[in-house]
Length: 434
Image (tube, rainbow, N blue to C red):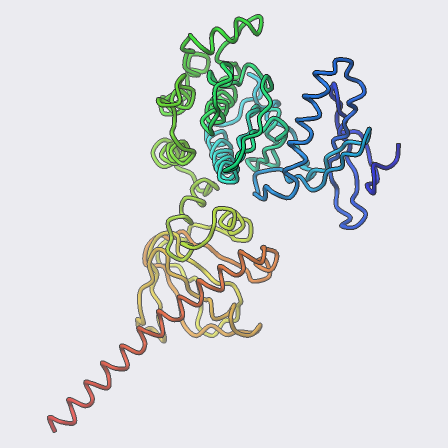
């Protein structure tokens, strides 16, 4: 076989009981894609074949509907008789299974960042009416150090105001929540439980319940409190034990009520427990952007785009960032700290956390000349955005930047008008006194 539909096959990526995954080329975009080709004829049991087809239809129905940087995109789907396949974004790398073994465990900060990104991706999916239902290391792809993409939404629950589509009896028993085992009504909290188990496995290299069969596994999930991850890896901070414990509480009422609660505890871990480091983690960056006024109208997906097109760095006190008379096109946003704006040594103003500067270079011409010095008054965290990088963002993200600049310019114009009014009033008063 050299083609599936219009797609040219490169090689096999993996095989399963009912499907084979191929690396292929989309002839129109010339991009690599992953194609999951199903062979439902291999299933002798008609009931299993029906369930597998339902799972395929669920995944196919999500084509083009989940657009998030930490979810593997489903780009196309074909279901015609014996030809059934789903075309997905190709993610080069490995699954988290590789890093859930005792001899390959990741640093705590890396695990916290991965779980944080999973929280934000699954929160997005929840808002689209999707509950994954099969969160496990094998369904989380890792690119580079911490860039993840959640895949395999075949077992998902698709919710709407009118209906809920659900196939029972699917999922991986070791990662199932108690309510999923009992086939109760599911909410996003079932995925919270499963992600808690994933975090447990990444921290310790072990499952919470090490049983010899699924029946015993089910009993333990429903009735037994697992030991903390630190029981198997003594240097795990108690704060991480606490996060896992709360995510894996047996009743939804005791568990994290929202993905934001789960993610917020990971942010607290970074701020209070993670060792001092020069690197600024994506977790810290994302939370910073969410709390800056400049980005108040950006969606979460657009904020992840901002991370992709920006450069972040820590700058010490009394360092020159921009020089009067120099050329440049980048603009900057202060994530932390204070800077002086000076002209010929005279102080024009102070800029603080959330303020933007250098944007006229982006809004103006290519050979823009800076018209003031900008010097750090304290240590600052600086967000730098190159307009060339910004052109690769989506139209929606670029629109939000334009809208933010418009509000910024209106605000500055209002301040300038107020200053001119005060100046004219002073001049008029001086003339009257004379």
